Image 1 (cartoon, rainbow, N blue to C red):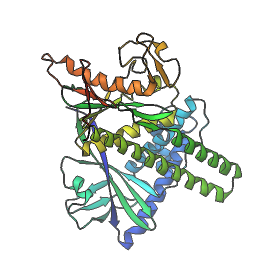
Image 2 (image 1 turned 90 degrees about the horizontal axis):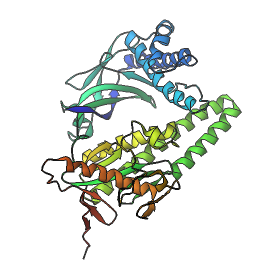
Image 3 (image 1 turned 90 degrees about the vertical axis):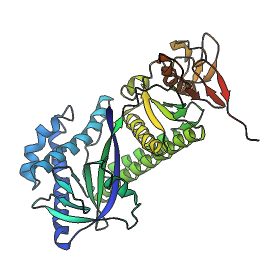
Image 4 (image 1 turned 180 degrees about the vertical axis):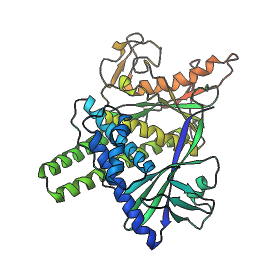
Length: 402
């Protein structure tokens, strides 16, 4: 039974005829205009993403040459941009209205068709155009992994213009199997705790600090403030460039951490990486702002697809009390965590870094689900710094290299 979808993107250049180039460029320009109109219409009166289409659709249709489906997609794009601003408003911040400047346009199943000969038909502001995908000659090129595999379904994609060339970011998805309900009766589990100061901490005591990321965000924010105060046209252009650089930096930073988390799992021969459930992350990490919530979710997604490529499952569990519970004696109390970074069990006296203690609890909670088996014959274990811990408390040190 599927519980969700895995998503991938395959980027390929489009072979666009001279006669179609101008038509696609005009479609891109109308799309940007439509997204901006939608934002402007919904900015002051929107309380949620679902309201944007009803507020802005008619205006987008009347003021642009977009077809009905592209007008709907434009309102959806505007809603996505506004949703992050709504989150900031709830925390007392005053976000800047989103501006659409990137030379892109979204496509879905109604506005784009992918053919077996690896060409695509794209809707424009006038008629459809058909273009060939410029694919690598090597049949092992990564794009064919999704194009030639019927298990991957084509979903929303993005056309972008870069240096006068057209690129299609083809979106694919496939159902994920419901591994979140499985028990860890066999195999080794790596627990991962998420936080603001330490973006991620593993049950093997690998710390991935968030200080660099938070520092760079403050620097970007300072630079944006200076440019906004300047107010010139040149400063406005630079502001957009700074925003794009920040996005690239953050994504690269999260990709690097996710790769290291997967590498840690591989080195410890883990079969599963366990994160805390992100559904109510604001309650478990009250100091996290809207950016951190976005970053946690991206980190989970990046880790999940990298782990899958290495044959490792990535799941989420309920994080209730993992920050207050002693990983040594299981005693739960708020007073066990006297300070943000320090854990001190009031019962057994165990002292540890609070995030490390939580990461061990996350891993152990998933492992102990194996005890729900009627036979209870599982050999699941949680990976720790110097060995593994079984549900019954048996510790097995890692073998030493002679």
